[in-house]
Length: 123
Image 1: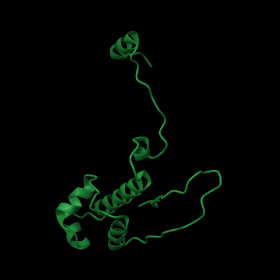
Image 2 (image 1 turned 60 degrees about the vertical axis):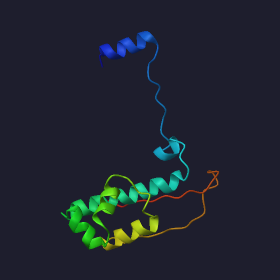
Image 3 (image 1 turned 180 degrees about the vertical axis):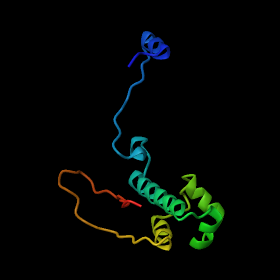
Image 4 (image 1 turned 120 degrees about the vertical axis):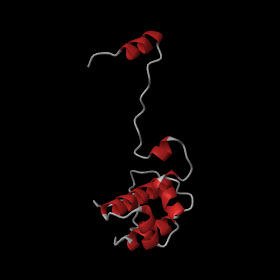
């Protein structure tokens, strides 16, 4: 791949960007508290958006069906999840016809701490 003029200038100045591999959780990478919960909520919210889109619903129609205010659904779409608990997101998923399964299991010995994860099957 040929170097671009911009990349060449940066390299000449010595301020080449440093790339740090992700841990798989952007919230943890940013040092945010409750990173596991934030990632789980983001994954569940994304699944809700995909289901609404797959069902061809507008935000207004989806909000009516889910029993939430349209501005709340708009916040979910924008990633503003402060008003959404994991429990509330799970209720929305069931209202969209999805089974939600919660699994509790021992953490592997190879990991120093237990974690919270949400895994969404293909939609």
